[in-house]
Image (cartoon, rainbow, N blue to C red; front, side):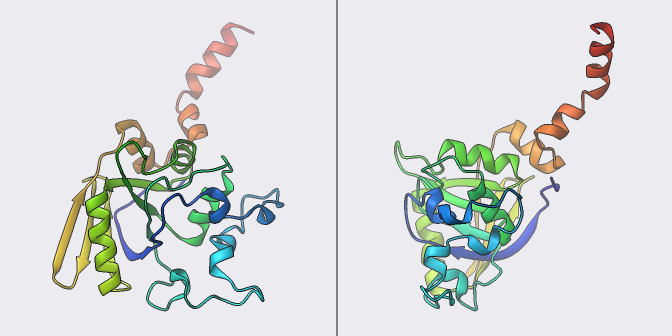
Length: 204
């Protein structure tokens, strides 16, 4: 897993709540046993017409937001089935961070999806509903606007025409460390390889 570094990228917004994993990657794209090639299937039911041509109305097909690296949506993002392919599709499209709001008891992200994101180097950022409203308002006025994500400082800075808008976010310290150091579960285990080897030698 690559180390998460501060970056500036285009922001794309999908203004819907409860975007489930079947919307992120429909089940017909789950036949591959490989962990590659899922980026083209992200949002495929919304992104493509019946004849497989691009739907020009969908945000990822618009010239201003093609190649976006920051995705903004509404609450309960990634709900539905636990398929890890959904996270692979988001990452392989090119997104490095997803922003969503918590609204009362409704989470910003479904738990399993959020956990899978952490294991695949995708940063999930939880903001307030009011802050996400502000971001969507900026996206409507300025399609193609960019933002800087700084995980070390735990900030997202939207570079709007009227000036920068900075939003702070919280993240669990252990997850922050994993992302900054590029450590997946296997890499974390291998940090204790010497201890594991010694234990196995003593208990063989």
